[in-house]
Image 1: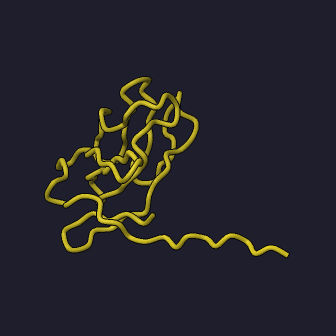
Image 2 (image 1 turned 60 degrees about the vertical axis):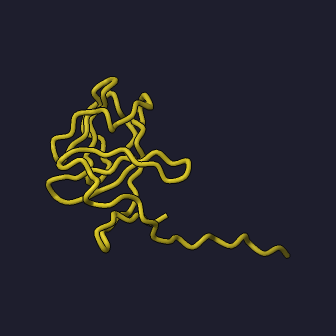
Length: 110
């Protein structure tokens, strides 16, 4: 009988100071090998992987209206709060990362 591998416990990581965010826009941030997009939106701060699920373009270069992010390559549209696809050609949702603000820092749960 073999033991199942232990699952890693997720922990909160400091990502970027709130003061360093591009206000009302998308800020590119790296955490190790991960390229992330931090959205300073109308409904608060959210975080996703930075690459579009359709063409792998960097969403940080796209148009952000405070709730939706448009891919700069093919204009796929995503909800930056939930990752849901809102317009083709994108079909797969964004991978969102749980985020919070603590002591003036955006933190992510990884």
